[in-house]
Amino acid sequence: MNMIKFNLRKYILPSIQGRGWGVGLLVLLAACSHPKAPTAFSQSEQLPKTFPDYVDVTVPVNIAPLTFTIEEEGLDFVTRITAGKGEWLYAGRDVCPSEKQWRRMKADSVIHVEVFVEKQAGRWVRLMPFSIHVSPDPIDPYISYRLIAPSYVTYEDLTINQRCLETYEESLIYGNMSNSDERDGQCINCHAYQQYNPERLQFHVRQAHGGTIIAYDGKLERVNMVTGHTTSAGVYPAWHPTERLIAYSTNKTGQSFHTHDNQKVEVQDTYSDLMLYDVDAHKVMPLERDTNQLDCFPFWSPDGKYLYYCSAHYVKQDTAQATTKEYDLIQHYKDVKYSLYRRPFELNTRQFGPREMVFDAARDSMSATLPRISPDGRWLMFTMGEFGVFHIWHRDADLYLMDLQNGEVRPAQELNSDNVESYHSWSSSGRWVIFSSRRTDGNFTRPYIAHFDGQGHFTKPFELPQRNPRYHHELLRSYNIPEFMTGPVRIRPQEFAAQVRRDSIQATAE
Image (tube, rainbow, N blue to C red):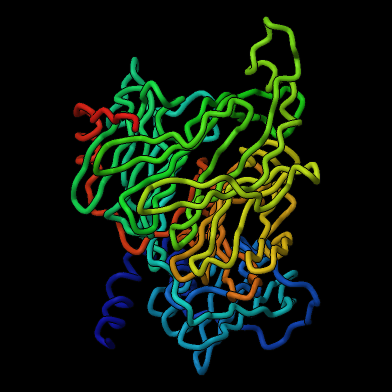
C-alpha cells in the first residue's frame, strides 16, 4: 500500500500538475475521503424532507436497501446511520447504503438516522432524527406489475415486469412490442397467479393475436374465451385457491375524457357479468345474465368457498328508444354505485348459490370495488370512492378494511393520502400489503408497501426501494396491478411471444 501511495505522488501527480490538473485531483481525493459528522451544530425540531419518505417506516427483514435523497436547502449534507454497534456516514444529498452495509443495519430491529445540513458556511443544523424499524416478518421475494405510459390512446410499448424485493433486479415477463407493428397494435393486462405461484399464471392479450395466455406447471396455451354465451373474453381474473378454475368478469368497457376535470378520464363498464373457466376442460360457465347488474372484480375467499365481487344496479334512466344504454351510462356516470357481494360455491357440483350482501356502499351514496381477502380469511380490503368501479383516476379513492368476523368497516387511514389509492394485494403471509398510489405527483402510480399486524392495524407505507433514490422522479411510467409472488416467472418472454402467435384454443360454453 505504501508503494502505491509513493508511486501516485512521484509519477502521476507531477505529470498532471504540469497540465493544470493538480487541483482537480486533490479535490477528487478529498471527496473520496470518509465524511465526518459535524461536532458543532444547532438542533432543529423539523424532520428532514427526503425522497422517498422513509421516516419512521417499518420494513421487512429481507427487503433491498432503502436509498433516499435529501430534499432540503443547504450547502452540504452529512447523514449518520447507526444500528446496534455499527455506524455509517454518507456525504451529499444521496444516501445509498451498500447491500453489505444494509445487511449489517438490518441485524438490529431499529435503524437510527441523523441528517446534518450546512445551512451557511460552517453553520450546521441537525434535523430531527428518525428511525427505520425492521420487522422479523419476511415479505414474498417477488412482485410483478404492468408498466404503462400515461397515455390514453398509445400502448405500443407496454410491459409486464417482475422485481425481486430482496435486490433491485427487475426483468421482463412479456412486452407487447414482441408482437406489435405499425398496423397491428397489442395491449396486455391483468396478470394473475394461483396462490402466488409464478408457475401458475395468466394474462390477457388484446387486439392483434388476442386471447388469454395461461401457464400451468410448464404447460403454456392461448385460449379464446369468447363464446355465444359470454359478453366478452375473460377480463378481470381470480384463480381458485386450490382448483384449476379461474373466475372472470366479462366486460364491455369504455372511456370518457374530461375537459374541465383534474381526474382526466372516466373508465366505465356498460355491461359486465361473471363467469367460471375450467382450465382443463376449456369450458366457460356464465353465472347470470342480468343486464341491470354490473358485476366486476371477482376474488375468492382463501378456502375457495365464496366468490366475492362488486356489483352495481343500474337501470337505463332515459326512456327514449333511440338512446343507448352506453350513452345513458356516460351521461349519468356519477350515479353508478357499486357494493360488495359474495356467492357461496360448492366445489363438488361447481355450482354457485344466491348472492349475499357483504357491504352496502351504495346505501351511503358511495361506491366500493376491488375486494381482496387476507390469507387468513378474516380481513377484507377494498377501495371506495364516490362513484364508479375504476378508481385508479379518482382522487377521492381510499383504501378501507372490513373485519369479516364482526362486519366493522373503517378507512385504512394509515395507508391513505390526499390522492389516489387503488389496486392492492395481500402478501402470502398476510403480514404485508402492496398498493398503488398517486401521492407523489398526482400523475403516476407507484407501489407502496405496509406491514399489517393481523389485528387490523397497518404501519406507515414505504415506497418500493430503488438503487437510484431519484428513480421514481424520473420514471415516466405508472405501475399497474402490483401482485406478490413466491418466486420469479421463469418462462422467457420469447416463449410467451411465440405462444401468442400460435393458434388459440377455442373455449366452449357449459
